[in-house]
Structure formats: structure tokens, C-alpha cells
Image (tube, rainbow, N blue to C red; front, side, top):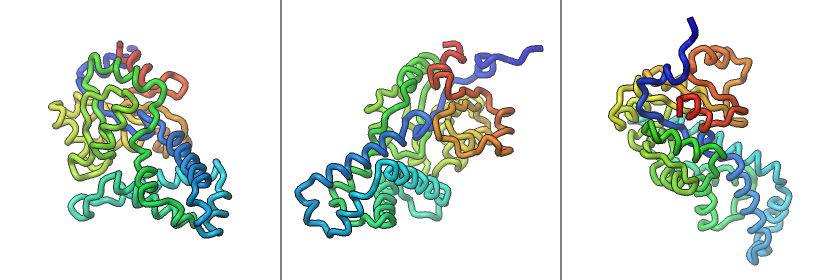
Length: 270
């Protein structure tokens, strides 16, 4: 007996919830480019010469590759933040506030404190609102939206998601944020809360993500799973037993060469 097609597996699904950072948008390229540009703009600014000489020297010594490392550290700090957040115990802080605070901490770590004005820091911390989408994201989401309710399920706060949706012309019909539940993924309140917000049972919703840890948590609560490989996004190593096991339980696996969300739509019969 042949295994069921993707369309058959998802025949009862009515809603698709999407991770956003790394899954729908390419945070790495945008953030790295913004860090490089901010440093170049500062070095050319009239006030640069009034900064302490050691700061000038330090900023000028940071290479483009190093700014890429800085961007990755910034992203890593987000992961540590959400995993350390305990609903009901940890005071609420949204992702915008985290991005701002962690930027200050990283600049201090890199011995670059004092380079930017408060206004420049605020602008730079909001780069996460204007991340370029993956090239297949907008078309794929609009196609999927013809049959399914397409919604975010992101740790990003509502204003951040609204800006990303508008900037990238992503076409999300519903913006569901961890902020709505005062908890961060992978807390059960986020997945179950999203299903309730959509008015569907968990079995009628599929989580779409480029991170197997996110999908594993969603699956625990009854959601279907769609894995979309994205460059440098997966935390689990292919040799990790968890990764190998996922090959058996992920309901739909789209490889990096297959076309992202456009391929998801095709496989689901659209």
C-alpha cells in the first residue's frame, strides 16, 4: 500500500501557523548589512572624530565578517532569552525590548559602548522590523492563503510582526504573537493559544518552521508539522539522533533546493 500524499495528510487542515524569523524572513542578511552600514555611516559622520581614539580604532577594525559574527551573537541572545523566560515568574519583556537591551550588552562586550547615540541605537535595534523575506515567501503565502488561513505564530511582538508583514508583502491573514499569551515558544500556551485564536482544533492546524525544535513542540500538542529547510537555520545537527528521528515524524519536509513555501503550496495541491 502506498504512503499517503501530502494533500491527503493535510486534508483536514484549515490553518497554517508560521514561524517567522528564519522561516519566512532572512534575518541574517538584513541584520548583518544593517550593522555594516551603521558602522560605515558612523565612521563618516562629523561627530566620529570627537569620540575617544580607542573607540574610533576599534570600530574601524571590525570587518564585515566580524559584523556577521555580531549578528549571530545577537540572534543567539534571543534564543537564550526566550528559553530562560518563565511565564508568571519572569517579568514580561517583548522582543523589541530584548533586541534593544541585548544590542547594548553586545556593544559593551565588543568594547564598542558609546559609539552610537540613543537615537541611533533605537533605530539599529528596530532593524528586525524590516527583514527581507526569503524569495519564495510572499508568493507561497499568497498561494497558500487561497485555501488555508495563513497566520504567524512567532515570538515577535505584534508591532514587529505587522511591520514585517507589510514590509515583505508577506500576506499573512492573521498575526498571532507569543505576546498575546505572555509566553514564548515552545511553551504550550503559544501553540494551543494559536489554535484557539483561529477557532480550530490542533489537528486542523499545521505548524510551518525551519526549526525542528519548534515543530517537535507543536507536534506534542497535536499540530501537523511542515519543515522548510533554510540556509544555516537548523540548530540540530544532521548527525543528531533527534534530527534523524524527525525524518520519521515530520509530516511534510521541504529541502532547501525545493523552493520553500511555493513548494509547500504545490505539494498541498495548490
